[in-house]
Length: 174
Image (cartoon, rainbow, N blue to C red; front, side, top):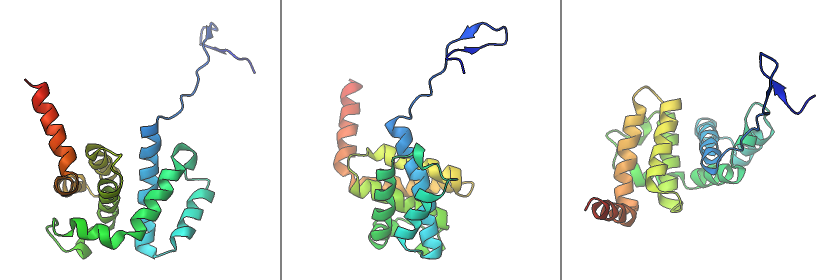
């Protein structure tokens, strides 16, 4: 096959190079897959190692387009500390934890994990990524609920980061 593709009028067109996904795209894909894995763990109580193996082996899952190390960390970290994560946001809820939609619960656990354990992930990124997961997998308005809860949680666990950002914004507006 030729190195150069042709257009409809048979003139050579430059061959397109597939761009490698950015780090943020890889991380987003990791979160998406981790959400599915955490949801499976919540619903079936399958061993985390078994779920992880299923995801790695399953050809329908696009593990090549994600950061596998980050996927593994999210899956293992969220499942190992689920009770602790739940206590971080439980008092912010307007209903008992047991009444949360399982997708919302999984999304909030992932968001809470990133907010409390992954200080290298900016709080706004952690919240936004969780909101996007809720939009993609949750009920119609669940992303608004997730946003509100995680924003309140960020005010508690990322107080210094938020204050520094506000101060920087004040300085730039002068």
